[in-house]
Image 1 (cartoon, rainbow, N blue to C red):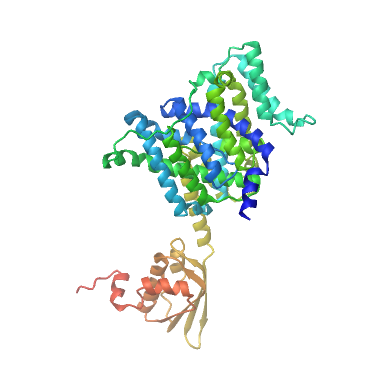
Image 2 (spheres, one colour):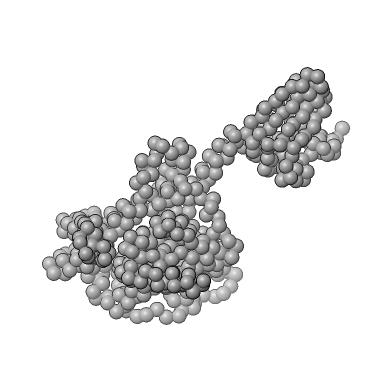
Length: 500
């Protein structure tokens, strides 16, 4: 069974994975260089990281077909560290980031993705699509008309080539776009920006490099404040991207294994002179759209990347940026969930607000973690508010026995506790009060406190109070934290002092 699974992961889509890996490798080069520049390090740091992370996650990651490499989200968190302490501290921070991510994997924190609602995922996807498009704008401002013509031509090739008979479906159109536009630029000797203008490409293979920093508490104090957010953002972006690729391919992935895989990959990157990275939604979408499905596409993307920058650098430098801009615009268009705009009218207002706020926060701050945090927080608040409205109390009066019975239905917790108390008439003169809890559940100490107040207020008015129907879970929390049957605590709950 294990052998069948391995074969499925690696050899079920050889041709598609090879072609997709080549396209992704070409798209990774300018991105890795750009992210290196953002972080303030040499371009080879980002390129080595992209090679190492892509290859490592291909083997140990939990999501086949998802591309991981150096990313802008991670690079932004490194700027201050590199500026104040230099490259060596960045490398050791990358190692610690990997260790923290492996620990997260063993703690099964990947399972926390189930708390991220569909609205947050959609907002995350739309925000990333907008950011990918915005990242291309510098390449389209203050340029000659040739750049616009090349970009438009590239988009035409990408979207029209698949309709050609025979070859249209067999060769990824982004690859055709890059090859054709490169040929045109070289033949016509166009004066437009190329990959070589982004920075120098490395001309040697990466080598093992242990960071040259003292292993002291002082060093830990320096790198820990950077390693923690790097680990969190890296895992968050990777797990969100894995969820998106799951949807695109209609398959499942092991999120906890992905946490460990990202950690191992970052440790390997740090030891080979690379910076920390994570999953890339743009390149992952390119991979899927180009036919990549298995781990082979991840592996070959990293290998092709290294071969091209080290051994074919003279050719790669001549690729026009307009070709890669066209590919990334295609990615942004394909990534954006256009259906979410149509669904704004039909989906609940709370879901739409969560999606829109996630987009706004991510785009405004360029902080993926903050955007997702705001989205999850809003979704949780809306959910708690909705559930609180499902709690209600009915009552009936038995005149013969002078007994009022309250039937509590629903979930009693911090959001519905005030409504729970307000449902009782404490001034009614009756001999006995029965609170029927057969169809109720008490979740937290706020709800237990609300029950205590209700019981004690009835008793203060002279009524005999009986609770019936508590389920086992509610009974456990009430027995532990409730005070209405503990005389020594009654004064405290009613706001009086025991001191005379």
